[in-house]
Each structure stands twice: as structure tokens, then as C-alpha cells.
Amino acid sequence: MNICQFKPFLGTEEYESIKSCFDNNWVTEGPKSKEFVKCLCNLMNVRYGVLAPNGTLALYLGLRAMGIEIGDEVIVPNFTFIASANAVEMCRAIPIFCDINDDLQININDCERLLTTKTKAIMPVHMYGMSSNMDDVCEFAKKHNLKIIEDSAQAIGIFWRNKHCGTFGDVGCFSFFADKTITTGEGGFVCTNNEEIYECLLYLRNQGRINRGTFIHPKIGYNFRMTDIQCAIGLSQMDKLEFIIKNKKRILDTYKNLLSINNKIRIIEPINENSNHIPFRICIITLNEKSNKLMEYLKENNIETRTFFYPLNLQPCYKKDNDIKLEKSIYYYEHGICLPSYTVLLDEEIKYICSSINEYFINT
Ligand SMILES: *Cc1c(COP(=O)(O)O)cnc(C)c1O
Image 1 (cartoon, rainbow, N blue to C red):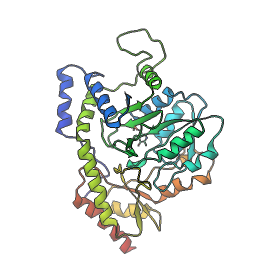
Image 2: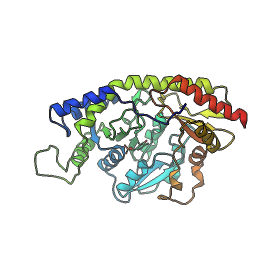
Image 3: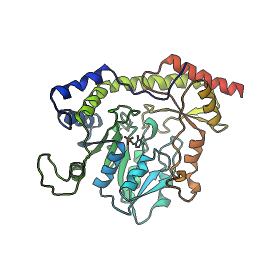
Image 4: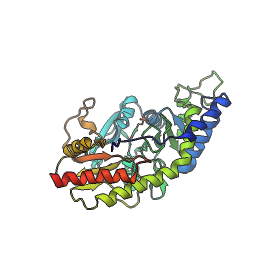
């Protein structure tokens, strides 16, 4: 067997859906984009949404629309994909790193010490198909008068107390990159319930005007559009969302079942029942040693794994003073492994992965 880390779930439906763009000779934002936005707003039960070219630019757009400016500080978990921090940097604002909990989500108890007069916002990142504790985040933000931007790139279909991730804060941002829960190749989405922020988003994403076809621009803006070709693919993916979620749950249950006998590892799961779990990746940690040797062993058995995200404070591009309070993000990086978890992963393949893991611990 040879099992890769990830495959996007694309088929003839997506292939055929783009035909109408060619038939109607409409390839830039148009009817499909409108429908895709509506579909996403319905799923999330949110009032307003706009598209963006990718998740990173969705975050940038969201930060700008909620008023983040040069020199402002934004609290970002130390454990996330680097785009979360880069979007802050792109605003010429400063990402300030906080630690995480044992479910890999933001640790609000570590945020108080990071507050300064320049702190303007907090960015919970809903990691690996689980929700951050949004009770904690909202309470903290309210107490300290901070804006909230939710990095929900990995959180399509993820809820906190039956409310969709990305709809608690001032803005929520999503990605449709090839390895996300649904994909348009590249793509992003920003949602908000705030009409003023929505208007800002519209100006910023469309050259400082609301409608196209006019050359009078009340504000400075840019081009953050997607194409109808991508949105046609996105709509087909939305039709499959239920199937994708069903399979991700099957995959999680199968892993849990087959690894339950193994007390040398732990599967990362929500620590709070208010969050559901649709694994973005199956994340395990090795309890008695670092994870690199097991990863090596799995590679020899033709199973492609990934490390967890590298702590931001250690990144060559961000290298900050070594902050000992960021210990959990470092621990989890050193002990974590992402296992394959894509929609069409077979039970047979999961069996092979799990018996390889269990075998490793018998042999060592
Ligand atoms: C994927 C991802 C992003 C960036 O999205 P892109 O579409 O790749 O730009 C940001 N944050 C997190 C947590 C992600 O997983």
C-alpha cells in the first residue's frame, strides 16, 4: 500500500459545473459567485459575506475592514499556519503570540499578559476541525475592548454551541485551498453580521467602489475577486459537504477504534463538548517520546504523514525572544503527527495505518 497525506475530493460534478461558465461566456464574478456566497451565508447563518482570492487575503481583508492599522497589535495563537500571522503583518500590524490548550486551540488564560495599549484585536484559529472556546474568547474581547477575527480556514462545518465558527466575532475568514474541507483550488470568504464592516469589505475588495462598470471611486480599494469558474466548483463542493463530513466522521471513528488499544499515543479531540469535531487532519501525539521516529517508520511503510505546525515564535522569519510561556505549542509540534484523513480514504487503508502504528510500539 502507498497512502498519501491528502487528496482533494473532486469529480465529474465539478468538471461539468464549470461548463455553464463557458456556455454563458461569463468567467469573472457573476451569477455563480452570488449563489456561492448565498450558499455559504446560509450554511453559517450569517448576514453578509464576500469572496476573496484565498484564505490569507480573506484574513487581510477582514483585518483591514475591522480597522486594523499600522502598529496595532493582534493576538494570534503561536500554533497555527503561518498565514494567520502573515495577514496581520500585511496590514503592517504586529502579531503577538499566545499559547494553546491541549486541544490545540487558543489559550485565553495566556492572553492577559500580552495586552498593551496597542492591542486592538484577537484572532482565535479554529484548528484541525475543532472550535476554539468562543465563550472565553468573546468574554476576553469584551472585557478588554478588542475586535475578534476568527481564522476559520479549517472550520467549514464546525460549530460552537450550535453556532457556526466564524460568526462569533466581528469577522470570520475561510479558505478553499485544495486541502481544506471544500475546495475551489484557491479561494476565500469573509463573513460578518456587521453592516458597516460589510460595506468596508465591499469597497476594499472592488477598487474602492460598490459596483463594477463605474470609474468613480469614493475610496481606495483593490481587487480581491474570485472567478465564476471557481465558484461553480465551490457550489458542487457544497452539494457534497454532507458526504464529505459523513466520511470524515467515519474516518475518525475508525481510527479511534483501531488505536484505542494503544496507550502510547493520544488522538487530539475537543476538550469541550460545545465543539463538534470534523477532522481536518487526524492528529495524534506520541506520549513517551518525540514523534519523529514514528513518522520515519510510517514513511518506510509508504504512509505519508505531516508534522504539526511549527511554532510561530521559532520561525526564522518571526524569530522572537524565546518565550517560555509558549511551551504547549512547542510540545505539540515535537510530539504531533497528522495522519491521512481525506474523504475517500478506505477503512482498509486506515487499518493498515493503525496496524503500522501499533506495530512500531511493539517493536520499540
Ligand atoms: C489554509 C489556512 C490559511 C490560509 O489559507 P490560504 O487559502 O492557503 O491562503 C490560513 N489559516 C489557516 C489556519 C489555514 O489552515
